[in-house]
Image 1: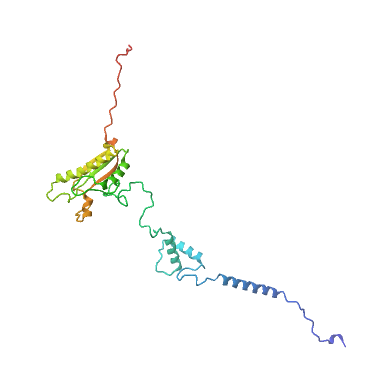
Image 2: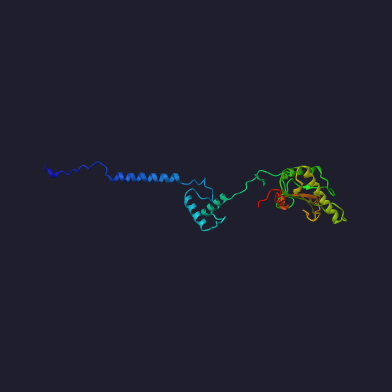
Amino acid sequence: MAKGSCKCKHVECEECPEWIFTFADLVMLMMGFFVILWVLKPNPNKTPPGAPSSQGDDLIKAEASIREAFGYTPDPSSKDPVDIEMLLKKIQTMKLNGPGEKGKTKMERKGAEGIEEEVTAIRRSKQATVGGKLLFDVGSAELSPDLLKPLDEIAEQIRGHRNIVLIKGHAGLDDFSEGATPQETMNLSLKRAENVADYLVSKGVSADILRVQGCSTFEPVVQRAYTPEGRASNRRVEVEATATLVESLQDAPASQPTLIDTTAPQDN
């Protein structure tokens, strides 16, 4: 048989072509990419309705900062994620009073406690009164036992100081009958202030810093008081410590003249 007459096919190479390996690597990369997307997808059960999801938070915050820089005011009823982000940020920066505070201060008390739950000022002034309310019985200038405790606390506060202290006595319209003269109401208010001043002096307060005043019925705390509590507020004595030192109102002693000894020999 002649050599050129054989029609058998040439044995093909059993090895895979090189491009098949590149294709396999691409398929593996695509599968890994989709697995990563599936893992990072947001969970709809954990995202509250209307709130921005975890995806794209940085972009939302950046846009919210840009709007805030331009003075944009978010709409409280808007469902825009950027508006919601701005509202949440504003709420977090607000200083809200928590429940249960009831207006109580956390500062340490340095004044007198008095007979009330809180030391109160009866009348607005530069200095708050201490020791509670100094109230008197109808038509009386005598110090009741209830007044001794707040007076002791006032004496402890002002004892040793050189500030002028005003002791202002007041009378109420119910202290006398309708036929009382202005002099009678003035004398009663002045007597109340004098009794308070005498008690403070007996507790060691210097008498030269006390200034006693009678105000009669001219400075009522409660105008047209009809209830017993309102009328009692006008029958009172106010103790006000001022910022003026008593020495600033006293005449300074004159300097002593220099004495010359005339018995000493004089030089010619």
